Image 1: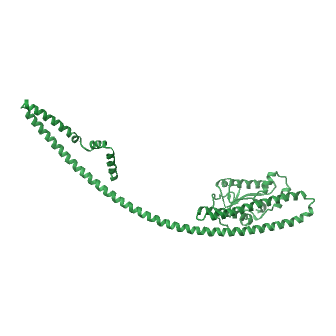
Image 2: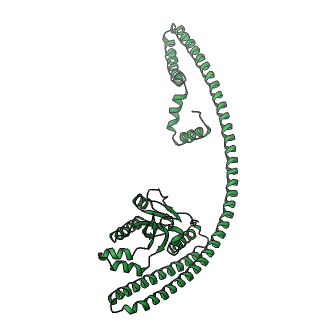
Length: 381
């Protein structure tokens, strides 16, 4: 791995911080002979002192001293040659280091240029994203306004349908008054059922009004928040899809039975009076979201439908239970769940046993239906 400028700077800082390491570095960089030169000179000095002392007493030692000094100069010359060679090597290493510094500086300049270009692109992308966000906000505002107008129209239609229902019920009640003595108990039960149905309808209308109020409040509160506004619109659409399945059974269930018609509460009560069912079984049929009848393969067939915007395992189990009670009454019945989307758990429980109507599309029990929340709702056909 190459020795970079950053490595050199780190080394210099470490040596400044730890002076004791300088000696260890010098031990590694200099040769053993150069390190021992001071010791050699010291020994030579000692010898010269001894020779001087010896000259005082032994003149013959002069020749030996001269020879020793000659050998010392030869060793010193050899050491000097080695030092010169090391200096050349050091100069070469410094030249290589300067080249690496120049390359590092060029690389730094290139990276700074790339960073400036990336920053410029980031600003451009941010401006484009901001324009797109403003456009989506405008579309969402228009969609919420359209949804609110549709809700007002649907509630008006629902109120008119309820008024007609009350008028039809009053006409039937006048017709049945002739049989009052014979059917007193039956009408008492029917009045209780109507009262319960009216209370349930009032409760659901109150829930719908409260939900619409919360939606309007969420619209005012979430100006500028795309996520929350989208969630509120999704909940609003959930109420509409449930109303569609109830109001237009033919549009969504004609692929399961021919000419599907809704079974009214009076007809269901007439059916229950002629059979002995347990109270929980009767309650299950009364609480079924939607009962339809039609013809399938030439035979009269009823559909026990549980309606929910998001279908869960509980909806599947309720549809199966309602169909089971209808079969106890001798009626050929099919369990059905209807909504916009269903969970993976609900799909696993319904597969092979329950019809699924999702987003207006019909999936037989043996077919695989898509799972997970839907991002949008489109009416089929």
